[in-house]
Image (cartoon, rainbow, N blue to C red):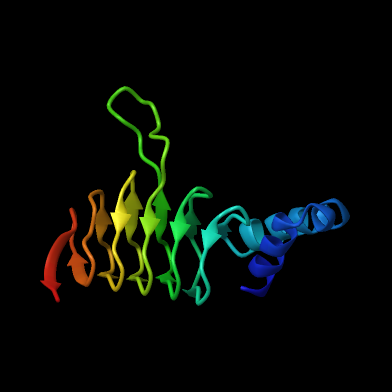
Length: 145
């Protein structure tokens, strides 16, 4: 997390970017290649990000993630292909206080509301309302407050 936050500070400041562009290369090699956590320094993530057993984690750089986000190993968050083989142009937008179980897939131009829990192995391809718990393939709501 420290490496990710340092990379984000460098990305936001043009002077720091010019002085420390080498750090972004270091980040990519260490975090993405060695640790197998594909969390680009371009990704917008609020405070309170928690990665549990991050191996195999893939998060698309255009994904927007809110505060207090928890994610576990082997999770993919990204864009999807349409029937013609074209990739959609927008990635998921994830709200605050979202907890994602291991081996989950969240793809497409969708929104996940605040205070959502996504069970292990869940495949999310549609919007999820606030305060919901979802499981399964495809994801289905099992509880909502």
